Image (cartoon, rainbow, N blue to C red; front, side, top):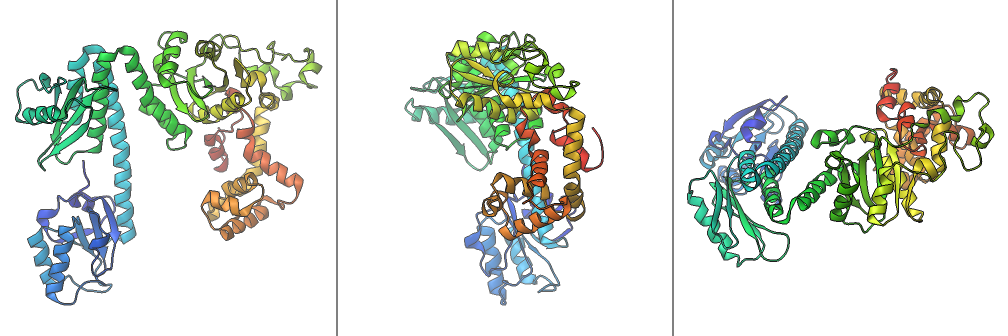
Length: 557
């Protein structure tokens, strides 16, 4: 669905009046922009909702008619005026020219910035809706492939693309179609496939009424077949994605189910990569694809393991059903696995929290031998973890970390990758090797939560009353080693803005950043989530974002 001029006028909060060009209200609005140039055409790329107060409007009628004609020829979606700023009414000759060109001319009673924000918001929301449709359609096609093979894939593709689908042989011969009857566009698709000479390619035949995609099948060498999809013109981006995905599934029918699973993991892995890069909220991951219930064992193995090899190993070591809900993706730091935690993993170390032991001390002082945990686990011992079997199957070293929920997966990946970077053989888990895992056990959850809340509450209350990201600014400054230039660059603000925020943070927090004790309190309150490895103990500390937000509002989790 595209955002037309008519739909733009009906967006929430918009107050507009159509003055001319009613026949052009179907025009698609790609962006809303203000221009007071006498000739904005060189700066347009099509689909713009141009807003003006009339400063650049030619004074003579002939010039105004030419102005409208140039905008229409350049693909401008609409021309909108804010009256009573520079002109009190739109000249009649301009309106007549707009009617003749089919270019909508409107009076805007809403601020220009509100129109721009509304258009941008619609496109952002539509992109999310499109992504959801694509993911749902991809999963439907994958299910159809498993249940009904080629015919199921074509039916699901035609349904979700809102069009028709055709499968051709390597030389353009008709194999299967949805709907089954012969259609006029089939001949055009067959000719395009035959004209390729057997090589792999993809193209679109668009006559302005219908768009026909012709996509080769196969991953290497000559095309093993052709997929053609007919939809209304113009071709939507999500239909391109669905066609590409369907072509992969059809080729997979020739390569086998194992390759099909690798492709499924590639799609799921892209979502995981988006979460790890901060481009997708962790909570959305569970909405966009099926994920096992928490907790998770997050494993990172050394770089160089291909996705196909990773999926093959995962199929062999995972329990029945777990492979389908696991997540795998290739990253610079190594291949990442997010796996359901095995029931064989030793229980949570709740009994080992030093802070909860009366007269507590180090493990050795509590009756354990040096190098042994009081919960009976030796450092470096990781029996029962999936990561052990996975690394053994792949023949590479790896590191692991526990995640109590999807929101903890990025932090778990960082800790696991740090273990891999240390070198060594076999599989190492944070709970068995990393000293910071002991730090997690040393906290009394309620006390740690109260400490973090008490230290940061004045800053968050000031943010709520006066705005300004004091907490984020303070963290960026401390992480940058007191380098204001670096911190300002990371935050995307001017260094003077940063200094004003730091001065406010010092005033509100009750001490200067040059005071080591005050600085330590602030740093601990800010960095506990990163210092402490993920896991259920970390979740109990109330250090997740939701708990911090609740503290800022005076609520308790």
